[in-house]
Each structure stands twice: as structure tokens, then as C-alpha cells.
Image (cartoon, rainbow, N blue to C red; front, side, top):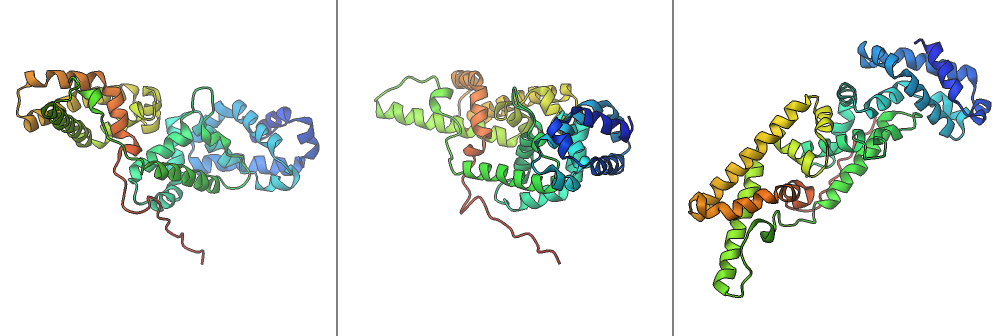
Length: 318
């Protein structure tokens, strides 16, 4: 498909009011310039992708034009190349997501630096999900970019709002595990039994949380995606540019390793054999999903000293 063919497809989808308001010559100039810039900016492979996505992308561009108030004055600010990368990533394509993150790496790094009391990897993963993973029945957030003005500016605002939400959730720290969910011990008013229950519960909580912390970073990230972010294997694979089978294998190994490490830590702390741990370990296993969601969620992390938000002023242009 040529730029002229693409323009014709867009024009066929425009609302009558938009057609009346648009400057046809200006629209043609913006479409042709943007079309030519896409393979230059995102690589030759983007041209082949564009040919495949062209019908849907044309409808997407027409929707943005139809929705733009004051189109006659806004049209010179139309950014077809930015609209393309937003549309491409909005389809969940791993190659597109990688291209987006390369193109906007500096922008994302600057916003991440303003929230330096929160782990950078956590912020980047949350932003990925915010932008590229669509909720059931909804479109990916990146598709909300209007196409007028730089995508970079829209990304800065969206990332900052996402990170503020994470920061606000952090002070609400909760126990990683609740003893009623990991122990099969009867309630009792006997002070000795109450003390024993609390002691065992504390060991179980620490053992499980320590086991999670000891996992490789990638395994912990994939577990967070499953048990906190509620992503599917296909969505995780797309986010991290790996095969679905790789995600499944790492998750299975992580669960097996986590249970083994938890059992070892409990045995060392309580000084009992595996038979004596059977009840607690079985209960942890039955509550694995809930336990992991609590351990891995931002609200389960210790609240940092002072504000979680510490803006770093961006350098003034010279």
C-alpha cells in the first residue's frame, strides 16, 4: 500500500463533518510525510508490518481525526509516525513493544528517576502493563494517544500518573501472610498455645517471603505478573519478548523452588523434620495464589522513610 492508497482509505472513513473541516492538501502532506518517516524511524521491518496493519491503522487515524476539536488548526500537529507506534504496540506485538521502549528509553528513564525510592524495574513493569496490556473488553491504554502533538509528552504524563498511583499504595503495608491462611492450628485461649501459634506463624511468614525474595529476578517478575497483575502466559510472553513455553517453564520451576526453599527455612528455624511441617506446608500450597499476591504486591513492601515521591527537577533547556 502506498501513501496515496492509505490516504484514500482514511478519507473514506472520515465523518462528513470532518471532511468539511479538514484541509485536504494539508492532510495529504501530513500523511505522506508521516508515511515516509515510519520505516526510517522504526526500521525497514515496520514497512512490512504497516502493510499488514494498514486497514485497521487507517480506521484508527480516521477516528482520531473525527474526534479532534478544531481540526483545521490542529492538523499541522498530526504525528502519523507516533500514531503508528502507538497503534502497533496496542495490538500486543512484542516487536512493537521493544521498538517503543527503545525509542522512548530516555523519556521513561527520566520519569523513573523522579521516583527513585521505588525499584526502577517495578516501575517499568507497571508502566508496560498500563500501556500495552488491555483489560477484558477494553483497548490497551496506549491507543488513547490522540495523535496531535508528540507521543513523548503524552507518555511523560501517563507514566508519572502511573508511578504516583504506585507510590500512594506503598505506605499501606500489610503482613505478607495471614496465619489463618498458612497454619492449620486450632484457636485456643491457652497463653502457651497462643504464643506457640504466633511463633510458628511468624516463622512461616518469614520463610515464605524470604523464599520469594531469593528467586531469580525474572522468576519473581513472572510470578508478579500472574498473581498480582493477573496476566496470561501469552501476555507475559509478549511483554518480555519470549516464547509462551519459556514463561510456563520458568513459572513451574519458580513454584517448585519456592516451596522447597520455604520448607528448608521452616525446618531450620523450627528444628523439626519434614513430617512435622506437613500441615503448614500443605496449607501454604493450598493458599499459594493468595500468599504470592500479597507478598509480591506493592502494598506488602516496607514503606520507605519519608515520601515515596521525590521529584527530581528536569534540566532547563539551554
